[in-house]
Image (cartoon, rainbow, N blue to C red; front, side, top):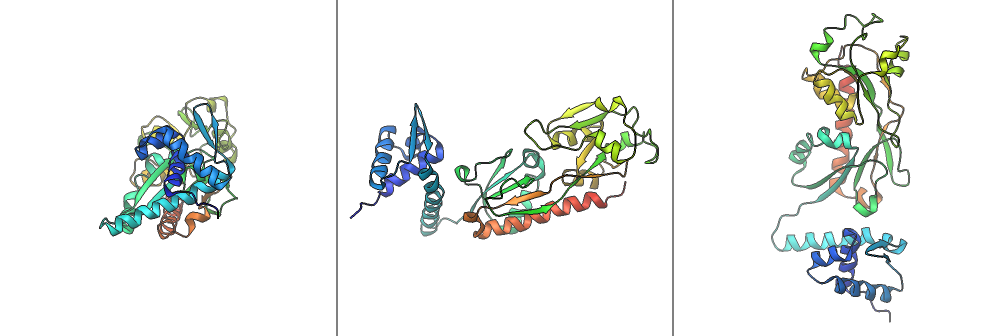
Length: 309
């Protein structure tokens, strides 16, 4: 009869895999690093499978370890939930949400209180991540991304955004009319560049060409930001005219901090996509958050498109 791994040994493996080191796992479990190492070796011997590659002071999961980790973590979370309920503590579901950095810095963090108020108590880990994200290592439940990066998991296109020229009301007074081909002449422009590893963001040259205006060399000048949120903040501060995504600028347009001085917009090349791994898709809190987040994204994009210049 094959001996089953001990619960303590599996706990040691899960902690080491999640934290990335035997020392961190030892501190979490209040034992020595040597004890953690021995417990994991025993589990490996009993299972007949190697779970870690040991490289100097680091440990790296093998394919077998990667396969085991999410199921064990969920199991220990469930055990903890049962213990809290039996002990009289209120159960609080946990949700790990990963979004682009610009969305984490203000846009989503400002709205989460609305979800918590409607859904009830929930522990949310909000992560601002560039693609690709480590779904299993970080146990991510929901990932919102620009473009379809994760077709190996259930993924849906939820909305396609556009960019609009936006600026402060004070700066807008210097722009006479949308039909004036020199409307932006002499005004500082704010450029957004997502960097060499990011997707291509519409440039001012793209906008001028779409508007049928011959761009001049002056369009290369001005401020530049490597995030959509930073470019938006620069425009709100009155430092120039930015090409801002509707999903980010809707609130500032509604409260008058920004205006759309020119009508022409450019649709983004890719949609925003929502990815939810199968292990998370069956959870009620994930389904509720998905519905809420999709609605928030679509409302913001629609609102910006409807606001008249």
